Length: 601
Image 1: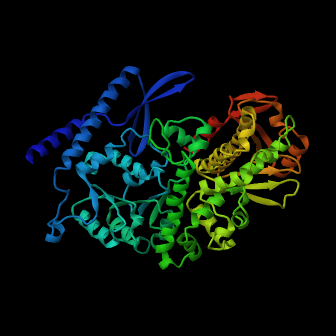
Image 2: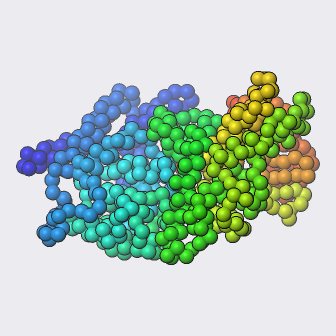
Image 3: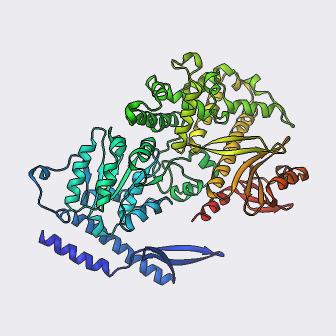
């Protein structure tokens, strides 16, 4: 043991003499510059360095990281810090699965090359900041980076603080009494940072969560609770923890993070797979949650429907939202949620579930192709709609009204809506009207585009299996499928831009504006400045005058300025390069979405 302690002392001396931080490169006007980035007095500092100095610092920083890894392993061989005299029962060990020292170091090594999500800043402030009497709640749906974020923050701890950290992997059979006993033991052994993963699995968590803030956080421990049961945390906050917790929700992953963290570029890739951190990519996990309708449906069932059911079961002895619990017990909650997702623009009305199922995506495309100016086509004449619809319903686990054993009422839809909003799965953007200023509706947007697209992809695949459809020539089939795919992606891209703009600009009003004929896809209104910007959003790489015909319509612009102030800019957001055409600024969609993030840093 003395040899271990001596080596620890040697490493600590070596670490103290080496720089911490990182080297980063920036391009300014086409030229690359290197900066040394480090933290001083809890503030990030960047210092320009020459190429030679950057190379020297990089070697020293890497050497420091190697020594810190070795130090963590060695510390794991020592008794816990500040060990007090333990009773015989305490010496028998922990009741739950707890990783410290070498085991914890090995756990964090798995993610050392993963990029970090932006929201880790909030967790970092809590862990590395001053004393707190609050617990930190890190919650969100499965595969949105919660556990990875915990491991990443553990790697940021100085070696001497890492020795005081413990990771508890909670299991369904664990009780709050088990966790309390282990926290008490950890506290006696001098541990100051405790991370409890999937803590909502315990049946009595919601009713007894005040234990974490009142007993342990109140005595100086930094307690981080993680879990996929977002509703459980929401109930706990309102009942037990109230103002004694800090919340960080991970479910919504904007485009800029999808690109920066996963290393994948392109709005179409985000439409297909966005929503979780499990898309196969350069920087992260290697599987895709939304690779197929089946995997997306499994995600809806396990991550969403079961999330809701778990909270209903354990909150107030199951008395809260009992109707949805009955839906789940009969195996029909996933059906109701899938109906809402596929028919999202129906705004959660009960007819979405009660009427005979018909794909909204096919209906919209059929109507548009029938009115095509160049080559109109009625695709319903070339589809066995009964056969295609049946295939889609099987793929999406959707039932028709006569197959449901529980009658769906408006209360069910209202409750589903409330829960999906708490889960951050849906958000709303206003749809306003001119000249009828008294009218207003809501556009409901799914925040995980990959989930929505996987369902749309199921529609396309079922059309390809239809015997009547395959009789069309190959060019005709391709035209229909390309039109369907393009229209789905176009609507989804429009919703993504609306949602992310609204979230990035809390001081402004972001909405879609409908006229008697035509519309502005997006308006950004600044009430303080008495001005606005108007946008068209097109899933196209080509710039053509027809795209901005409404933006240059004098009557529409006059109505808009009368209601929302001076129009300060007219834009088309599309997939091509930034250009100026006839006074209309064209903006690349990926560049636009990434720029939104810069405004919030």
